[in-house]
Image 1 (tube, one colour):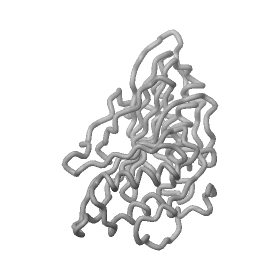
Image 2 (cartoon, one colour):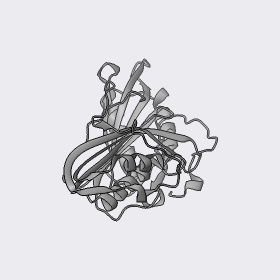
Image 3 (tube, rainbow, N blue to C red):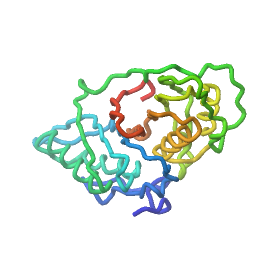
Amino acid sequence: MTSLDESPLGKTVVAPVGCDPSILYAIARDASGPRPDAPFVGEDIWNAWELTWLGTHGNPCVATAQLRVPADSPQLIESKSLKLYLQGYGQERFADAEAVRTRIARDLSATAGADVAVTLFALADAPMCATLHGDLIDHLPVAIDHYGPPQPDVLSADARVPVGEVLRSDLFKSNCPVTGQPDFASVQIAYRGPRIERAGLLRYLVSFREHREFHEACVERIFADVLRRCAPTQLSVYARYTRRGGLDINPFRATPGTPMPENTRVVRQ
């Protein structure tokens, strides 16, 4: 299934009874937005904060789950369908947490068309809040009056000043392409190459404010636009989105050879 019109987003649905992988709704990645021509590596890091099931004696168990979906998987997992799928675990009995992890990994991998790595954390072991590292650009004295569509022509870089640096912003906002609900994120851009003009980068990131696109497609658009307009030799773009319905999605895209990131939970998550 790939049509957004047929997805459960924005619709009233019946709560699931039991673990039912048929609830999971796949969307072809190229249906969620234009994919950049530039090659990249990456993954989508999901955190599920409301996972619960029953032990063999009927006693409730709780955990958080980290899900890592490869950026080259042929399909996305639609977020509302994933929320409903995980909700179905609430009254199912399992021998232990490993049985839960194995079941989730099997079903999500089948839906995405690639191996999805699943890790469960006891609440005492869940990642604590931190801050994405890098220079914050949010307080630059910049006048902004463009909030969509994304405006890549404001991006520029000075080839006379090669640098290696990490920049970040907590002001990013886009909107769900189906429901129009706001999606807030902190964005980190790490690169080597011509020095990116920071005021232009801030204007560019804010130009997504009224734009409608899925999390993953937004990050891929940022990656492609910065690569094309600023010509870095190395580049990574990492967005940590706030949660909705107990889930947050955190896409990472980078030039080949870049290590995958830590699952750094930021304060709004």
